[in-house]
Length: 128
Image 1 (cartoon, rainbow, N blue to C red):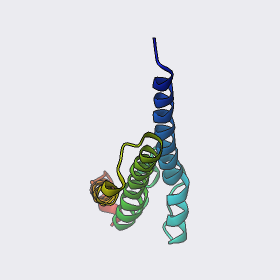
Image 2: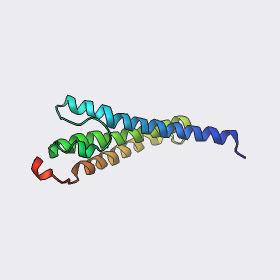
Image 3: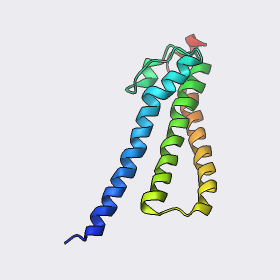
Image 4: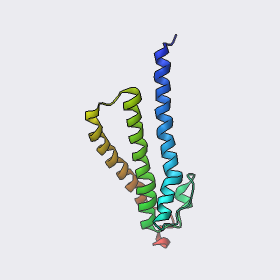
């Protein structure tokens, strides 16, 4: 039989997961698109198959706007929000570890975005 505290912990875990995935979805589908458009990059709107929808972008536009801005910063935002919610709701992080962990998360997320932006796609040769 489950303890009442187990249900509360599971619910807090669900809130953390839902919050971080919701922030990632909102960033990748709307916020990054608006920032890219404001910088003059003709990014496609939406989240599904972003790599194919944005195949008309130049390599540089794809690298910075899709790879770093959309994917890298989106992952950082999602991980940072997850860690923040875990520290508040589940008390899994101490405040002394927060800044070091945040810097590490930023570096890993940006390198992930660089990797996604750098990967070769068919048709890159004709786009510049």
